[in-house]
Image 1 (cartoon, rainbow, N blue to C red):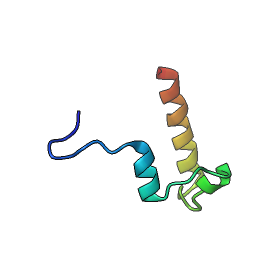
Image 2 (tube, helix red, strand yellow):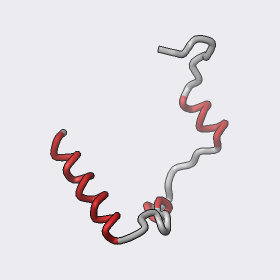
Image 3 (cartoon, rainbow, N blue to C red):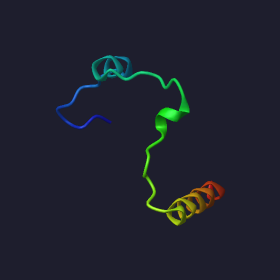
Length: 55
């Protein structure tokens, strides 16, 4: 359902307007310093694995 006053914009049009492009490599997703420590990364991965087991 569209919020009132907004019209549907096809995905293809949004892609053109926003200049979105496909990934060339998964390396493009790397964000240096995303986790402050190895412990933060380990906690994130533990939570991620746990959430996937629930599905």
